[in-house]
Image (cartoon, helix red, strand yellow):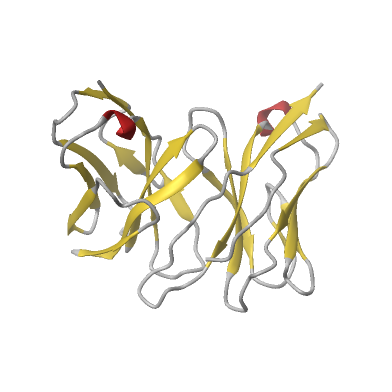
Length: 113
Length: 112
């Protein structure tokens, strides 16, 4: 069974903290994605990666960075967490071919206080 | 990516077919139409995708108009478990990768 695993289901952090959200996939996928989901705004793409050490900005990259040192792991980094980054964060992965489906993790609900 | 337009919400009676429309009038020739759904508190789940031809799988059917400017997802016999937000996405290849850009989707409520 294919799997995308996010390290935490719920997370509470303080303003100004450096936050790491981890995502691991076991399908040897080339592409990995980070989204945030907020009420009324749907899913918005933050960053995606198409290979190890390769990344591209999505629609809302400000305040975030990413790291992909190994193919199976894609990390989202909040350098200095702020309250407006309180959100549900979703990770996804897909194979390199562009006409294949993407698989999503269960999400991490991050609260910044 | 081509923009998609979907109704905000729809209702469907259990056992009836649910027809969810999507407008993607600016779609390009090499862009695929994808459908995902998200049940409350879960990550989005892939349903189906297509390029030109109509597609069917065990979950749903996808009807794409000949000009490809719109499509319809059909759930042939909706059940209460099909209550979810349904996203229509147009996916293109950028040369390095293919990103998935979601909109706000259609909230489908299946009722008894």
